[in-house]
Image 1 (tube, rainbow, N blue to C red):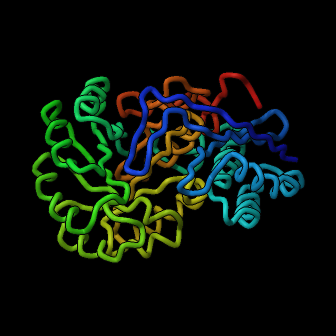
Image 2: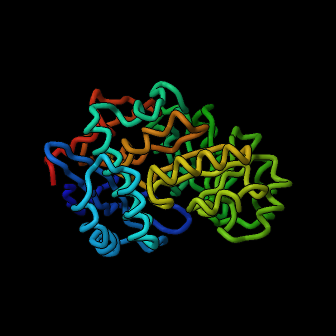
Length: 341
């Protein structure tokens, strides 16, 4: 019998984090706990107004599946995930937190790390970038200096002086850049910016145009930099739509509904010959540890969420200067600092 519990937390950030849509200083998040006997599993989903995910909506969605979990066991992982997806088709954030927790519990019962049960090598996969949020150029340069040991930086853009920002940051480091406009550009801007950005050592552009903008095809054909879909690739059905529009996809676990759909999206993207990245949404170490389980399958990863926090709520997979350090624990390796919920 699986017992379900959940609890909201507030995650204070080291710096105000700004993207083209707004700013956040404290990130609200929901931790989901599933228990069977002596074993616990943990998952997480942050709130996000852009995707209509709040503590209340996620909590209500989780209550839809409580009775189904009580009648099942952690060993029935696939059946539990299928039932959860059917119960909350309109709440992928809540589904993600439960999906992570069920995977964690399943692996803990078998006494193995989740990545090992999937046959993955924890030493494989890319290093993580560190994200520099929008601010004055002076503050962005200062933020970069604070994390000079990270190997790659993702620069949030969407201002009236985006190329100038990258040019100034380039003076501070010779390490690779990625840029993310979060839907703020036009096709004309994306194409025009791509040349100077490439010269400044940018690897790719993430989501330059709004989600359904058909002129993304023009960017795909004429940008001198590869383009990676984020907002345009929220769920499994979006992967095929991004083929021929983007060179790669950025999978967010909360947007697609967790690890199970993310793994299917990876396989589908590979079938289309697309590159695959996974990103985070300023989660604590709970969510980052779940994400870490699939990093060996990726080309790129943005898993700096916990590194952006002023204080965390759990231990687990540590991302230090872009390098993943897995704990010697089963499941996703998560332990809440304050103990079980």
